[in-house]
Length: 214
Image 1 (tube, rainbow, N blue to C red):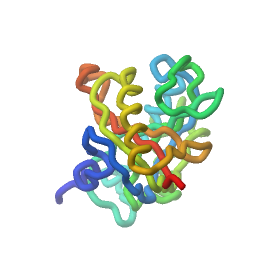
Image 2: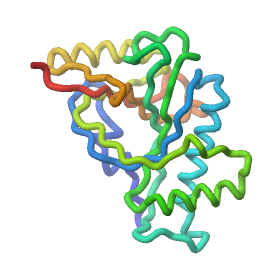
Image 3: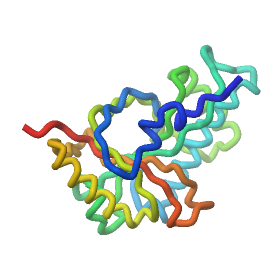
Image 4: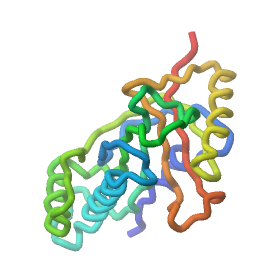
């Protein structure tokens, strides 16, 4: 059976061009972990990533344990994503000052068959293998982003402001307004593994919520 690869099946969500464009992002299911601090140095961020991938692969490999969920199908675990803001206000991805002020939600999309029951089972299974993990900040959510503008950023994370400035100019020219708020965040999707990819070759989807200008 061919595996569903969300990046290939939904190219409009995961493989945009380097030219910004407007997109309607549908409702999807995610496992999320919320935390704070500089992602480069924060232990909580590293634990969040460990939890997200641990749960995602526990669910993916559930067929090997005899606990295959109803509706299960073969798939590739989708990429890591992040919603970002700061302790001193909203964050547009441009004005990066002190990364220790970051607040974030890290998340990985889940297949449609992942229910609260499947999620609870996965936490119990992973907890048996890694009892030191704290799942208190981990939850399963349905998240609909709605109208957004997105672009592919190629290169180091610290160079993202240059790409975002171009995207923001496009948003204005296209008759929209950036709509970042407490409920709609600066969003990044990480298509490259920074441990194995040179900074200049990193690919990151950058997405900002928008609304029509009046």
